[in-house]
Image (cartoon, rainbow, N blue to C red):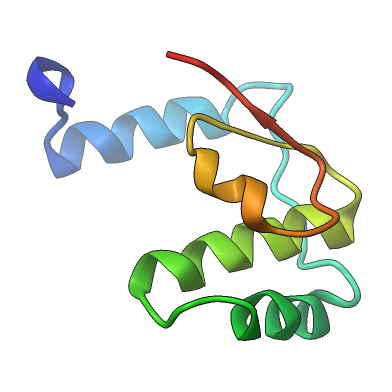
Length: 87
């Protein structure tokens, strides 16, 4: 993040500003999330990043959402609608 890194307080403020935007929604966990998360978790290595990525991928897949990211690692989740951006 270099010089654009925020303090914890600054990150919390930016998060609150983001959540206040009219186009932003907080969605409940979709039906089938646990089963899909189990499938994705069993397909990869055990690591902190894997669990987080698997949760986000399972959430997006079960909710019928496209996951947009810079992280090319999300291409490993079968059946996920993912848009990988280039820097």
